[in-house]
Length: 406
Image 1 (cartoon, rainbow, N blue to C red):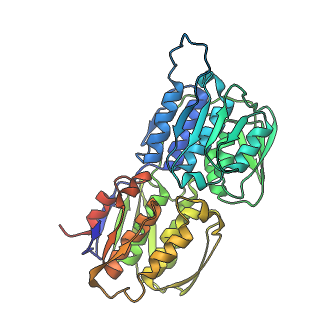
Image 2 (image 1 turned 180 degrees about the vertical axis):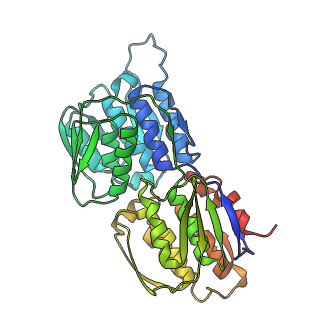
Image 3 (image 1 turned 60 degrees about the vertical axis):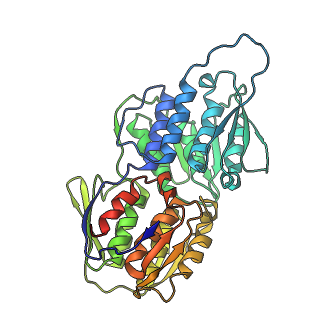
């Protein structure tokens, strides 16, 4: 995709996609609660569509077969969605009545086969799950024997050093209690899980590393998904790189439970201010002194790294970035990917040229969206495999086109 001629003085209204994280959690809750989801503003991302389709297939009764021969395992392809695979792994282990007598193979893309799942497998095995590695130890593909259902009537623990999704996967199934082992990371995502569970009637609370779940059942209630704060970060970046940009971000709240709402505070350092206007947030560029020695810790907000890195490069700012250890386990090695791509911008910031810089995306939606606003600082750019944004923000390019004169 070739991008050229961005307007540096824009005033746009952005219809953000619903939060992927919130949508996926709400869908899992409906599955565990055995009710049809009543979710408004459900994310249109590829990940959420995939999870929804798989869960619907699991809740559709299978037709009995006359043969008594063992049934071959059913393969579930989670593509490049770590959330889908990790959430489904617990569901297949503990909700055996929906799986009948089938066994399942959980697999995905080549990249998915290098994304860790071992700590979640260890916890599920400790409570009776029968899971086998079909390839490299600690990684998919996995064979799940559903005839050996795991019991959550235990106090369990899980190491979340490599991913907080391991904890969320277990919590959604409502164990008696859960202890968080290892280095803490992405805690806001665990708190988001707890908040959504509480909305559906779960009696759950966290005290430091310990999460307690009282006996309760999910209630069939309606849920409205807030817009996605991580996706909003790319508009904060666009405003920061503009001369006089302004954007209204629909269905977003500064007091959001989404951890990446922190982006509003972080971008004050880049000269972007935010204010609530009804159910929307308005962001705009203002004149201010920007500290050239910035510091950001991504231990709880790893998905914001590409946005912040690209913004610093576009503004020619130095920054000390920490908390990057888990970025190697994302859709790409995001630290290495962004370093490789941002090197291409050296000597081009604020020096527009006709020949485009060609950016690679590494099949990573967040890399593609973080690089796009740089066109305002470096002129023409070309993004390979631009359609990868559909993983989390399918209408990104349609919305981004508002930055270009008609």
